[in-house]
Length: 394
Image (cartoon, rainbow, N blue to C red; front, side):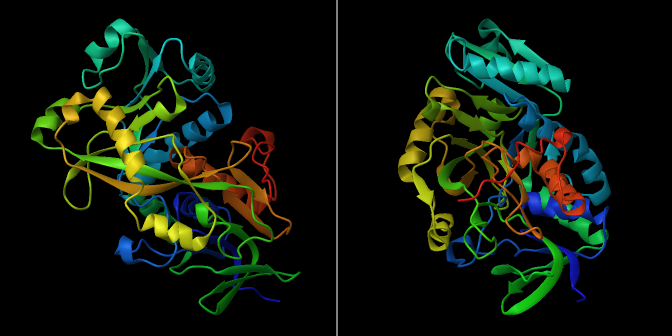
């Protein structure tokens, strides 16, 4: 039978929009399905996405070659995407890692090895120079720094998704602003249901992030853990801008995993105010149902996690004292392999692209490209780390 589309991508987030853009240069007959960002978060009853934000750290410095490679490939395309779309989203302010000399050394050594493989320029900064070079940061005398000046900084995820979707549409992709509620392999094609209406396609890529298991989108659920995380926003004034205005993106590795923290430079948000955003590695709530995910995204996050992050923030950045503080929700979608999933399900017509493991924003353009390659070629090769990306199902 004739189908409505050759390919349908479900999920208009960072990976799905990127997949649609890449696929538009490989094939015709493509649809990208996903709702737009809700106007009122706290009253919204539908699905959400974690890219509703203004800043995410981007870097290639990583202790894993696959993740470092995904980031490097994506970073190398940022400027071309900006130029073609006319939308700026990448601020190349650099990224600083700071870590105690006796802690996390295995990760640092692996990251330095990966950086050499990728040709990334990482400057090692002795503990005696760290506070002088980066005076906004108050770390102990046993801390050393690892600074990636180029191909690092932060991206605006909202703007990146907008640019990807714009270029996809210019390439012939049909954008359908709605929520898909079911995907079914009929044996000859795939049917996607949206608000009672059905669309048919030869193949479907489900790129619904933490919501991939919450509708009937997959033949079997993927093995992921969707964990609630809290982010903190410090409202920055002129006094604080004099301290933090020129800072790079920053990741501080503490002695304990729960003390790790990432810090975004001051960024202007849609309310017109400038915020310094930070978050950590602690998960306090597992999300297993659609209604629980909605309730979390409508909240202000965890008060206990906010207080924990604020204690660390004020130790590391005393100049934040007295700044107004707010918090917000985010989710992390973890896989047992530690890698994203890019592969087919039990159906040869339904593929899945998910599992960001809380580090995929910077790599989303490359992961989207891999999703497009999977749809058109049916598999991923070794240079694309295809074996590592094989989905695991619950």
